[in-house]
Every structure is written in C-alpha cells, then in structure tokens.
Image (cartoon, rainbow, N blue to C red; front, side, top):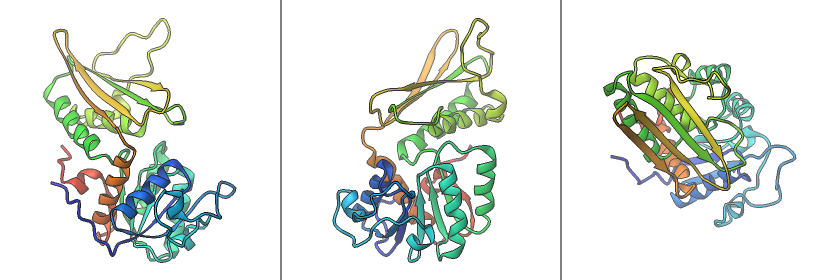
Length: 277
C-alpha cells in the first residue's frame, strides 16, 4: 500500500523548473502540500524573471529560478532532479555545500560511468533513483520480472516504447528498466541479453535475447509494453500514461520517503514496498 498523505513540513528544491517536467514537479509539490523553497534552470534558458509557482500554473511562491544549485537548495530537505545527466551530476556535487540529505533522481540517458558517480554520491546522500516514478510502471516492472522468471528461454521477450517526438534518449529509461527486470527474471544482466536493433539482411532474432522497439511521434506521454511469446501464445503486459502529473505524484512520494533515510541508493520498489525479485 502507498501512503498519499505527505508531510507538509517537508521542503524541496527542484531542478529545471522552467522545463516541461520541472513545472509538473513544482505543481505536484504544491498540490501535495510540500514547501517548494528553490529551483534552478540552466544558464541562458530562463525565464529567470518569473515566479516558480507561476511557471507551474499555481500560486506565487515569491521565488524565481536561479542557476546555482547551492543557492536553490539552501533551505531544502530534499533535492528533486529530472534534468540531463551532466546537470544532475553537477548538482549532486554541489549539494555537498547544502543541508540536503535526500535526493530524488528521475534523469534518464545516464551512461554506466555516470551511474557509478551517482552510486558514489549515495555514500553520503540518500538517493531514490528510477527510470520512471509512476506507481503503475513500477508494478509493471515487478510483473515483468515475475513473468520472465516463470517463462523459460523458449519465450521471446520484446519491449516496445512510444514517446513524444522531442524525447532525446532511446530506448527510454523506463524501457531499459523493464528490460533489466526481464533480465533479472532470467538470472542474467541486460548487458548480456540485450538484442541489437533488427536492421539489415542479417537480423535474425537470437533465442533468449531481449529486443527493444522505439517509436517517437506526436505528444505521447509514454506507452510501454512487454510481450513474452512462445510458438503457441503471447502474453503482453502494458502501461499507458494519461497525465504527466503521474510522474510528479510518484516523485513526491519518493521525496517524502527518502527524507531522513540513511545514505544509500534506493529505488521505487523500496518506496512502494514492492519485491526486488
């Protein structure tokens, strides 16, 4: 069960507050009764002359975006970051100079070395990191792991994801998260089971591998499906996001959960009490 009652005394600072997701996060924090005490935006991006609450379509907060994470997080308990990999890592380093002890990271497109940097930061910070903060997606991840573990290698696994045309990373962080769950169900790592794109005259499917398909079009918020197929039947698990607010809602649950935790790297399974295996 998830607790939708969040502590009103919790103060948060949010990265990228003028962006599409940043505005959703600010709105989600305000709607949840949390105290938004600061926010950042990349130099040259702006607008720096508008109130953060106004940008989110909510009440005025008396706070404008700044470029410095240290200034933005000066009075924050938790830092929330759904920006770009380089910006997220720079912010984690800057948080050493603040009182922040909890971090929520929804940034996608991270490389293995960048993930390693986040793991090192988790030695001093409590970090919840996830490719997707939707409660439904995290349930889908748990179901994918279970299905892959119950169905043998004779069942092919294919993951399909669709997002809006502006998304820059592919496959999505969520699709990779689902792929990792499927690989874990098979007792292996995604690095060893991930299939290259099917393209060209020699693109036959390799048995046991996990395939990915990507679509980019329109303003699709996010569609993900995991299909497991044998010679006789196909099982498909799917999720459709109807409102971007779903990600902000999950992020606020994560922020409330991570506040006061001991340093470490956590996931939404920890927040929601879902099994890891």
